[in-house]
Amino acid sequence: MNARSGRLLSLVLVALQGVIFLAVGLTALLDGPGVGGSWWAGSTLVLLGGLGMFWSGKDLGRALTPMPTPNGAGLAAGGIYGFVRHPMYSAIIIIAIGLSVGSGHAWTWAFTVLLAVFFEAKTRVEEAFLMRAYPGYDQYAARTGKFLPGLGRRRLA
Image 1 (spheres, rainbow, N blue to C red):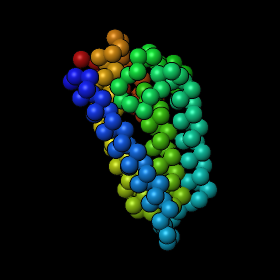
Image 2: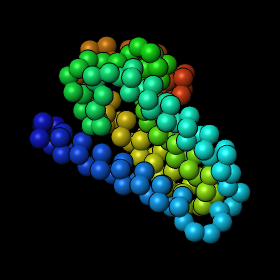
Image 3: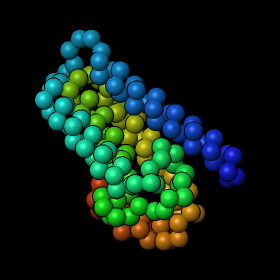
Image 4: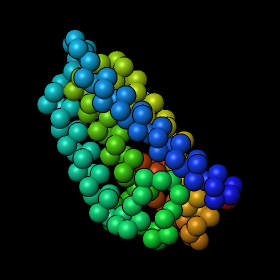
């Protein structure tokens, strides 16, 4: 993949991510009662997800970018990234789950599941870029969970 097509793919993935997350948020605001929604539990999850995003961004430092392509600032493998390769995505999924729990709307849950599936696909693209950019990424990925500590470690070839 050349640089131009990689940039285009990155832009498309970031736009899709935004659209799906927007759909989560908008469907959470639908009128009418959801089934079993809990404002308190949902708010707690949204707060925890927000804290996770802040922590992830802090530990990512200058390497922070919305794009799945590395920005050349180096590989973040310390802090929270020592436990999870994609904690920012985990935090966004926690926020989406919080919105789903809070609203109780089936559409919010559906878009939350779609967002989680999307992040699984986006990380596959992102990790291909990371493996080309950073020697040793495959070893890091083999010892570090993908979205949760210990789960989703890559197998070495």
